[in-house]
Amino acid sequence: MKPLAEITAEYLRDSGQFSLIAPMLIGKLGPKFLNPGPKSSLILTSGRVAERPVKGYTMGAHRAAGLYGMTRALALDLAPIRVNIVSPGATETEMWGDEAQRAARREMMKKLLLLGKAGTPEEVGEAYIYLMKDSNATGTVVHSDGGSLIQ
Ligand SMILES: NC(=O)c1ccc[n+]([C@@H]2O[C@H](COP(=O)([O-])OP(=O)(O)OC[C@H]3O[C@@H](n4cnc5c(N)ncnc54)[C@H](OP(=O)(O)O)[C@@H]3O)[C@@H](O)[C@H]2O)c1
Image (cartoon, rainbow, N blue to C red; front, side, top):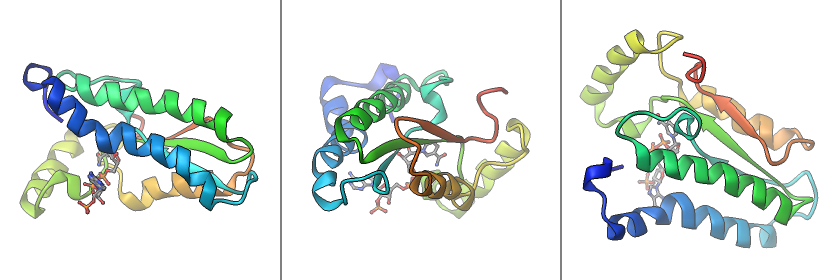
């Protein structure tokens, strides 16, 4: 994601494919492939910047917060299919770069984060499993963010 000073209308249109357009189309088309009841669900992914922005990351906050709203609206439109969203904090994935970049970032996160470490995909994955299993959860957010909202 580019900082505010570098974004253009064209960049916003192109980069929105993944974060806003694809989830909306999944909301449109997903029900065709799902059983029509609360055992079925869609789960989107946002991030802590939806609720606690980071300087220089306005574009990310816009996307992340928009996904929260889209989740709640889709939950109304698609019911009784459920729609929820997971909000991770810093999580060590391929997004962090190659092994050297990941090692450097891991060290930095040890000092910065409340739990002394970033999340792992396995930890964040538990949030998705919970939302798949709880057939009473819809239109809601599950955080797996290492306490970043209270730090
Ligand atoms: N990692 C974090 O710290 C963090 C924190 C908060 C929120 N998130 C959010 O969590 C989500 C997953 O992130 P991640 O950390 O797992 O990133 P990642 O390891 O880089 O994985 C991103 C995935 O998205 C796919 N992808 C990217 N652009 C695509 C496109 N245009 N069409 C189809 N697939 C596309 C990639 O496919 P390929 O493998 O084929 O490239 C890859 O499988 C993202 O929405 C991210 O914003 C991540």
